[in-house]
Image 1 (cartoon, helix red, strand yellow):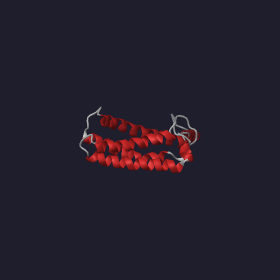
Image 2: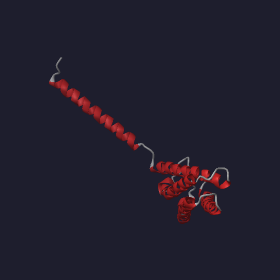
Image 3: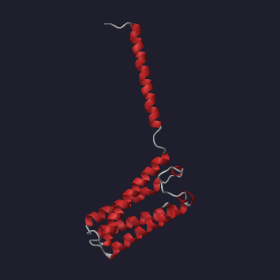
Image 4: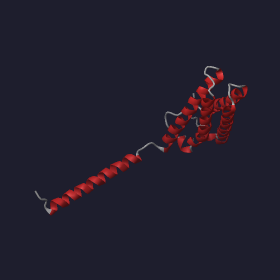
Length: 164
């Protein structure tokens, strides 16, 4: 069976139309992805979940509920220090939009200077804790004190800027 020129043109036109429809559908789907606010909220929840995971493990060491494994302690403290550097980036103005499923208080954006100071203190103390954790070989007073300072930073920020 051979196609007539008009049939070939119709098939080509149909193929082009189908391609344009698929392209438009893909483009429309890409544009309906998560909002920038939702992306920031999801990213900060991930960062803080990882910080919390590592802090809980270290709190167990500080309390004597887990053994002090120098390599593991250093690794977890280093992770917290790295994640602390990312955390403030995930509070852009767009994420103060009333999106559901966030515990960030609007006070973060109305008290930006205080929030930034608390974030900077957390970053600095996380780095200091990572340095202590890298050198300590036991659940020493220096290790406990550095972790305590870091925990106070978390508590202070949560009390001011996280809804219950």
